[in-house]
Image (cartoon, rainbow, N blue to C red; front, top):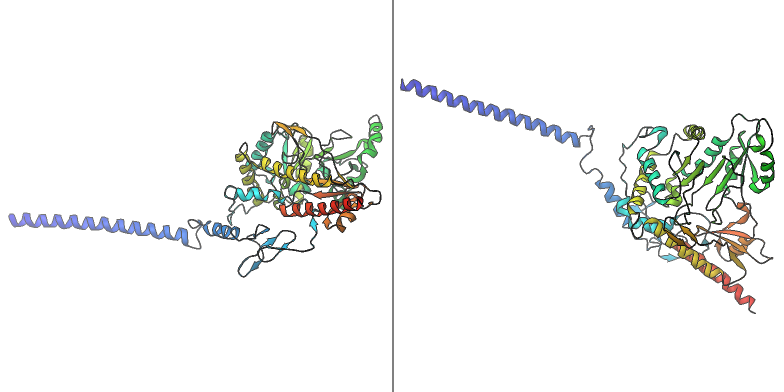
Length: 482
C-alpha cells in the first residue's frame, strides 16, 4: 500500500513539473513571437510604421547647418550648394568669401527688391518654436482637411490672427488660398469680371501703383478683362455711367485695384470709383508697416505671408471674400490653375502663425520687433535725406494704431524718393551713378523723377543704402556751398 501511494505521489509531482514546463514553453513562445514582430514592425523595410526617433537625423542635419558660421553677413541652408561635403554660405550683398567675412569693394547698394529679410533675426530667435519636420509620407495625396484644398486649422488660425491684429473683418467671409498674393490678383480679376457681358471689364489703379496689376492683365490677355490705365481718368465717366441705361452695364464695368498701404509710397488708400468690384491689396496692412486705424471691411481683401512674417519663399497668400458667387468663381480658377496651395506650404504657415499668436502681447512679438526695425530705418534715412534740398521723401503722418493702442510714427516698407532739381529728370540714373540700385518711377506709371528704395531687406543692405545716400547728399552739399 505504501509503495503504491509513493508511486502515485511521484506521478503527480512529475505531472505538475510537466505542466509547468508546458506553461513556460508556451509563455516563452508567446514572448518570442511578440518580440520578433515588434522588432520587424519598426526595422523592416516593409514596415508600415517608422522607426522610433525617425526625425532625429533630420533635426541633427538642420541644426548642424544652422551652426555654420557666415560671419553675420550671410546664412547657410540645408538645400544650399555643397562645398567640401557641407552647404556653403550664401552671402549678403557686398560680402563674399567662404564665410561671407570679406567686404566687396566698389559694390552698389541694392535697394531694388521687396525681399523681406528684415524679419530674419526674429525667426533666428524663435528657431525652436517655428521649426517644422515634414515626414516623407506627409499628405502625399491631393486632399487637405477642408474643402477646396484648404487646411481647416490654418484657416481658423488666420481668422484668429485678423481678430487679434484688428486689421480685417473675418466674420461672414469666405477664404481662399493662393501661391502668394500674386496668384490671387488675377484669380480675383477673373472672378469679378462679368462672364456674360459683351465687353471686357476695365481694370484700373491709381498712380503710383504696383506694376504687376497691369502686367498680369496684359499677359493673360483675356476676353473678360483688359487694362484701362489710371483710375482718375475714368472718374467722370464712371459718374456719368451711373445714370446710364446701357443694357449690358458696360460703362459701369470697372475693377479697381487699391493697395493700402500703397506700394511704393506707403500711404493708406481708399477706392476712388467705389462699387463692389474693388480689390483691396492689403499685403502691407500689418502693424510693422502702418497704423491699423480700424478693421477693413470690404468685399474683396488680399493678404500675404511675405509681408506678414517675411516668408516670401513659401509663396502663400489668402483672400477674404464677402460674395459667394465671386468666391466660387475664384475657387474654380484656382482648381484649374494649381489645385490649391502646396500642403507642405500650408503646414509651414500654420506653424509660423501659431508662433505669432503665441507671442502676441509679449515684449518683442513680431509686430513690435518689425515696427521698431522699420521705424528706425525710416528715421535714419529721413535724417540723411533732409541734409540736402536735392532730394525729398514722401510725407507719412503719425497716426493712432488700434493694435499698439497709441499714436505711432511712420515705418513704411519703401522710401518714395524724389529728385527735386530740374536737371535730374531721371532720378534712378542719379542714384545708380552714386552706387544705389533702385526702381524708377515709370515702373509705377509715375514720373521718373521718383524712385523706390526698399527698406525691408537685410541690415547689411540698409546700412549700405544709408552709406551711399549719405555720400551722395554730402557731395551735393559740398558742391552747393562752393
